[in-house]
Image 1: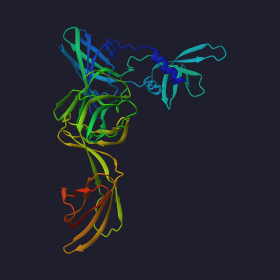
Image 2: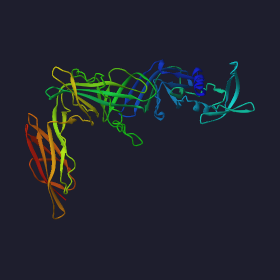
Image 3: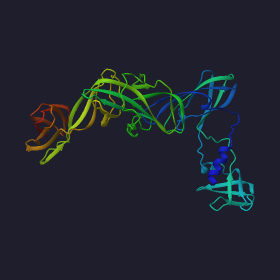
Image 4: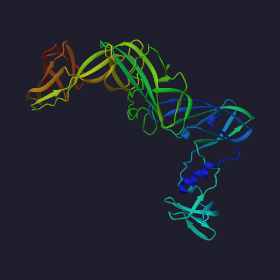
Length: 474
C-alpha cells in the first residue's frame, strides 16, 4: 500500500520547474526518424518555441526514452547559443523516490482505526533499504515495516522528471519565436524486410511484395513521423554494427494481415534514394509509431517478374578414408530470380521470404519460407522453398586407396531417381578439404572455390542417372 500511495501522491502533484520554459510534443512539432536495421535511429524534432532575450532554461519533453544524450544537437533559425544541457527521466518507483528524499522533511500519516481520523506529522527520512524506510518524528525513530501504521507522503520535487526531458541552458540575443531543431541518436528502434512471393501457376513468373516491419521499443510515442529506412550496415562504437542484430528480431508471420493477398500493379510505395553506400526508403506518408509496439508498412510491389525453379543438393563434406555405407541426400527445391527484372534492379535488404502459389480458380497455398541475405543490384536471389518429393539421391563411396608421395584417392557415386513426368536438372555442390583435384567424372564439374565442386546433373523423366567422380588429394 505504501508504494501505491506514494505514486498516487506524486502523480497528483503538478511539478513546477522555476524559470523554465517547457515545450511538449502536444504543443505541436514535426518529427522525422531515420531508422537503421537494429537498435538505432536518428531523430529530428522541429518545434516552435518563444524565448526571452538573454539566458533561459528550455525543457523539451516527448523525446525518446532511449536517447543517447551525448549526441543531442539543438539548433535554431535565429542566433541561439547552447550553454549546457542534460537529460533526465526519473523512474516512478517508490524506492527510487524515497532515496531522493533521504535527509529531507516528509510527512507521516497515521489513521485511527477506531474513529477513522487521520493524523499527520512532520518527519525526516533517515534511510531506505530493501523497500523499508526509517524516519524520525520528533525524538522517536519509526519505520514503515509490514505492521507499521504509518504511510509516507513525499513533497513534489522540482528536480523530478516524470517523462523523458532534455533540458538546455540557452542564450538568445533577442527575444521572440524560434524554430528549433533537436537532433539526436536513439537506441530502441529497428526494422527488417519481409517479402511475400506469389508464384504463378506455370511456375515461371512471380509477384513480389516487400514490407517493412518497424519496431519501437522505447517508451515514447512518435505521432505522424516522417520515416526513412536505411538498408546497409553502419559501423558503431563498441563493436556492434547496426546490421548485427537484424536476424535477432522475431520474424513477422503472415498472420492473416493481408500480405498474402493479390499483388498490386508495379509500383514503388516507398521512394528510394542512395546516400553514401546505403539504400534509403522514404515512406511517402507520416506514420505514428506507438510506444513498445511494431507496425508493418509496404515498401514496394512488383508484378509479373520472371522466376525459375531450381533443384539443388548441398552434399556434406567428402572425407577421405574408408567410409562404407550409403547416405541419403535431400533434393532441395528453390526459386531464383535476377535482381535486374522489370521493376527490380534495386538493392534488396535481407529478410524473410514467404512463398505462396495460387491454384487455378482457387485460393493460394503456402509453399515455404526462407531468409535471404542482402541482394545487390544485378545479383541473383535464391530462395530455398522445401524438399522435392519426386526427386531423390543417395551417395556412396565406391573406392579408396593411398598413393605414393602422401597422396590419397577416393571415388564416390551419387545415384538419382525421379518420378517426375518431365526431365529435371539437379545442381550438386560438394565440398572437399586439402589440395584436391578431380581425375575422373561422369559429368563435367565447375570449381566454385578452393574447397567446392559444382555439377549440373540432368535427370530423365521417371528415370535414374548416376554422377560418379574420383578425387585425388594430398
